[in-house]
Length: 372
Ligand code: FES
Ligand SMILES: [Fe+2]
Image 1 (tube, protein in one colour):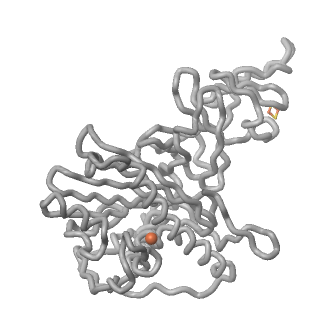
Image 2 (cartoon, helix red, strand yellow):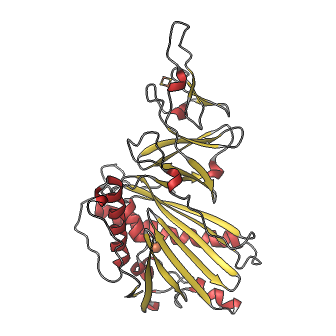
Image 3 (tube, rainbow, N blue to C red):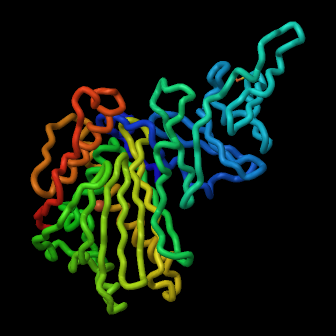
């Protein structure tokens, strides 16, 4: 769903840029889009990418730019083994990016093509996504991808259903993320007969605890004013949910009810420094006997994400004019933790943390109160 609105002057509406976190994994696209022998494109952190699957099934991700004169490699030919640039026919092995052939070279030349590379990125296939590790600019070949574990949706057994959702947001990744963790918008943005009504608003107390590079809403019985949670009552077992947020962009929610479970991983990925995309992958073993359960989850999930998307499109209209903004306690406290954790990561990346060591913004478990 890439439907950015246009302003009166025709330019796409988008707000101010955000600082980006490099040296981490981001989902580029659904691997279902990668057909053998075909190239696909994506944009991550302002970097244009070309992706594909070699004839042997292996994924590859290259910067969509020929190292010779910069023409996008996607205009070239891919035969399942090599990409041939459409301008001067240089051939590249797509997993390593190594140049395998420069057709214009003669026996008089002593340039060895093998020393020339298109920029290749570490990539892995997981939960239906092509995850790409984006190193910090200028870090050269020294990849730190092994230091950061690849994100994975938690599953509690081999039998489950799975669904994916995605929506483009015309705001920067920070607004996408704090919108994701914001408890106070629920009764206003997500009003629907099947979810909850505005009048169901009530005071809530939630316990949070610090975790590495993030925070956890400790295991609790889910809100009694949300219909989907009420449905789980049919199992006659206590329902418990745990929600984590971890840098750079991941929210995981796990709902357990006896041996039944629902698990989701939501990421907000910077496409450019001022736009982002929300991706949700969910797996579950609840209601698997219900006909069309996957279609039903997808239908309601898409409506839910669309409600957030419309709100953020409207918000982006306002953000274009750089208004002053505020974060209030306690409903916006998770957003404050996010900004502090992000700053700590950026300081560590720049080396500043060795001079001013940063600590977790939470001293320990804390209870937050709000009405939603
Ligand atoms: S621009 Fe690609 S081979 Fe020259
Ligand atoms: Fe929302």
